[in-house]
Each structure stands twice: as structure tokens, then as C-alpha cells.
Amino acid sequence: MKILITGATGYIGKRLIPLLANDAHHVVCAVRDKLRADKNYAEEDFIDVIEADFLKPETLHNIPKDIDIVYYLIHSMSNSSKDFESLEERCAINFRNYIETTNTKQVIYLSGITNEDNLSKHLQSRKHVEDCLKSDVYNLTIFKAGIIVGSGSSSFEIIRDIVEKLPFMIAPKWLNTRTQPLSVRDVLTFLHRSAGREDLYNQSFDVFGSEVLTYKQMLLQFAEVRGLKRYILTVPVMTPKLSSYWLYFVTSTSYKLATALVDSMGVQIIGKPSNINDLLKVNPLTYKQAVELAFEKIEQNSIVSSWKDSMISSGRLRNNLHKYINVPKFGCFKDYKERKVIDTDKTINKIWSIGGKNGWYYGTFLWKIRGYIDKLVGGIGLRRGRTSPTNLEVGDALDFWRVIYADKKQQKLLLYAEMRLPGEAWLEFKIEDGLLKQTATFRPRGLWGRLYWYSVLPFHGFIFKGMINKLVDV
Image 1: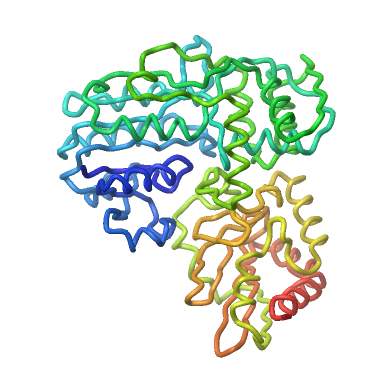
Image 2: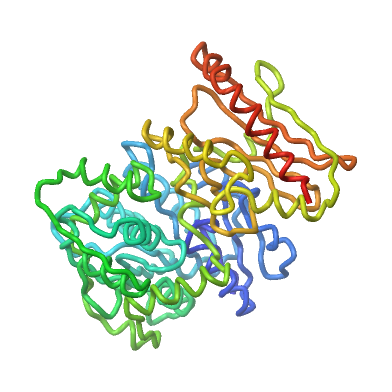
């Protein structure tokens, strides 16, 4: 079958694509920016990449008419807009209107469990999107999931941050909220096996794990898997705003996402039983099994996707990445350095391993201080780290940078700063004519931008000189 994946660069989409391609389906990946698509797709016979933005109906003509099945995986969990419900509605309506002009027989939508009367704004929006997607032309299959647990998922990474950093915690009362966590492997199985199933047409199913747990129980079970002893005291005095700040400072999440999570975590997420497990032959993993499986993937350095690489975790970027590839030349301050490369392969590997747990090779403590300052002023800080310790793809988060261009064959890496700045910043590494050329570019915004550059200039001389020396030092 010919299958369209929307949200193809997202956490679920990136994991679903190879499953469908391995079945010899022809997979069409719809992305807003082709630069963010996996470069390996170009070498696959069964995978095509097209650009389409469902908020811009004029871009949807790129979608083939001979599509059989579509996966709708578009969400905006931490959209910075106050009107995100309207954006999600427009996106769904534009999608429906265009897909009704194609040969599509089935649309499969991954939503959230919405059985409570008092829903968060994001869950209300998910429920409304279900109504917007319904059609008399194609058949709609809806899967509603709660907390998704897997390597790189937001819930997994946030719980990991909390458990591994805090031996004792005074936590908000929403830790007593009940939920049914589901392994990402099971989510993918439901989605994968539902393609083309006529017995699932125009039906909605809650999909959930085998246990009902509170968030507190999830934290404690996570600690057991990691061999850690943790103590948790829940208090009723934390307001939603205080809870959001608590999550923001303790974990790698942004404040906007922390606010959305706190809003959602106060709502019990319990699914309605159905026969979907029997129909698709799924036996959901327990929470501990899901956590153990996630750490297997982490230890093997085989994390396919991470919420941190999604643009929803972006501190600054909201538009297509290609707009930032051309580094400005005028009205900018630059710190340029070059060194002769002794061993090209080793230098390239060092560049592609920069940041995260590897640090920045020189003056890492100063990078950490800059990260703490950024966090204090509402930025993302250094806590996002990186998804893979040795591999970088366009769109990946790298501490408080975003990868704009990464090509080992061209021997060039370009990063764009997402920390709070009175301006814009780029950091480029490029090997040409046997020289490593390292350029930090800053385009100031007003007087404050210029004062900022001159205030950090002494540190730049120290950090960037040491960093380039380490990169070529064999």
C-alpha cells in the first residue's frame, strides 16, 4: 500500500516509518522542512519525502493523490501560541479537506485518553481534533493513549531526570494522580498492525498498559529499575505555577512544556476496556518492562527519536531550518579561528561528538555556568544534552544549540543558538584545504546585543581557542 505519514520527524513518526517500509509499503513522509528528514531515506526504494505544512493549504498539492492510508501524528504539546487549539483545529480541517480529494481509504489518528469530565486544554484539543478528522469520504481509526514510555519520550526523560537527581523530593500532589503508562513499542504495534484493517474502520480505541499506577509509583518503580532508593513526600500546597517551576528547574523540559504537563498530570488518565488487544494480538508490557527496554536502547546507543529533538522543545526556532543556514555577514560580530588538521577522521569524529556528556572539550565549566544562567532567565539551559553521543542529524537538539546543517562528507557542522540572547548566534565547524575553520557569529539586537558581545568577548577568546586546539589535537 501507499502510506502517508504526517509528523514524520516526530517521536512516533520516525519510529513508525521503518516498520512500514520493512513491510514493502511505499511510505511518503510529509515534513515541513526536507532538511529535517533522515538522509538515509533518499537511499530507500520504498520511502519518499515531500514538503507539506498543514497550516498552509497551498503546500498540500505535493501530497500524491494515490494514497491508500494516512497516519495523522501531528500534535502541539507545547506550542508557544496561546491559541494552539485554533491552530490544531485549522491543521486538522486543512488535512481533512485535502485528503478527501485523494484515494485514501483509512486515516489513523493517535490521540490521548479523554474519559474525564475535567480535561486539560491539550486533551480537550485532542478530542476536538478527532471530530475535525471525521469524514464521509474516508474511514477514521482512532487510538487514544495515555503516558507513553520509551527511550527519548518526554515522560521517560522527565522521570529519569527527577529520579536520578533527587534522592529525596517534596513533590506536588498531582503525583497521586492515576494513569496507565504504555510502552512505545506497544503504541507502534497498535499503529503498525491497524493499517488496512477494515474491522477497525470508523472506530475509536483506548490503548493502555497493563497496570494502573500513580505518578509517584512510577517514580519509585523507575528508581527500583535503576537500583536507587528514593523518598517522596507529596504536599498539597504547590500551585500549578509552582509545580511548573519545580519541573522546569529539576528536569530538562522547557517551562512551556512543564506548564502543559502539569495541566495534563492533574487529570486521571484511565482507559476504557475494549477488544483491541485481542484484535491486534498485543500483550502490553508492564511499566518496569518498558523502562528496562528503554535503557537497553540507551545502552546500545540506538535511540531512534527523542522529544528533545522535536521543535516543540525549541527555545527560539519556530520556522523552517533552511532559513538559518545562510549565516549573515553584515552587522555581525565574529570570532574566527583556524588550525591545521593532523588527522581528519579523528577531528570530524570529535566535532560530531561535541556537547552532551562529552562536554565542549575546553572550558566546559564555563559552558555549564552559561547554561545555568540561561535556565535562570527562562531559557532551556544545557539539560537537553544530545540524543546520540556520536551522531548528529539536522534538527537535533545539542545542549542549547540546534543542528542546522550536518554533513560528514562535506566536513561541515552548523549550529544555531537557542539560549536566551539579545540577538542571534551561529557556531560553525568546517574543514577546508586541510584546515579546521571554526567561526562563532553573533548578530546583535540593539544596544543590549552589542553590550552582551563585548561582555563575553574575553571568555570567547579563552573558550574558542582552547576548543579548536582540542579538536585538532591527536
